[in-house]
Length: 162
Image (cartoon, rainbow, N blue to C red; front, side, top):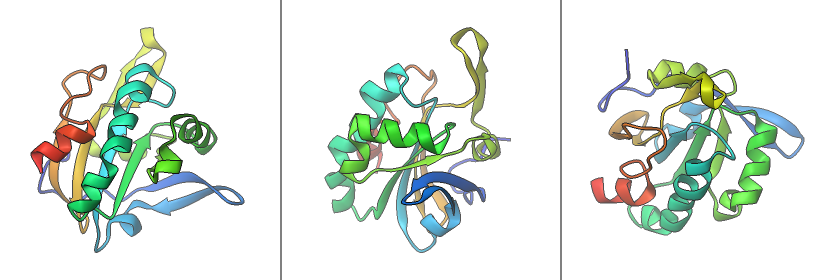
């Protein structure tokens, strides 16, 4: 069953590249008492994810801050090594976007937003969506009908919906 707007965000431990190597963080620690935008996508270094989704949040980061958003988090079904390299190549890290890996797709499955597309080499990947989370509650959720499209889940789409 898919998690919906108004639901509590599922508990998850995600991975990132810390100063001393791979590290973990509880997603609830990132959202407790905070206003956070989380966007999820099929994978690092993939077409729409690299050319549209991440850049849209880099462009709109200041506008989100002006609306009281404390942090923008990108979640992808990738390991922390890949996400670190992708963050550097896209400029996401430099822009202040937090890149978190859901390496085993546990969070993605708990959200009810996993898909598999073997012809594209994508197994247990995340659908493309974005959400506003306030103190652990999903207050806005926008999902694309097709993972190759980035409109309602883009930074601009989220800002318009807020």
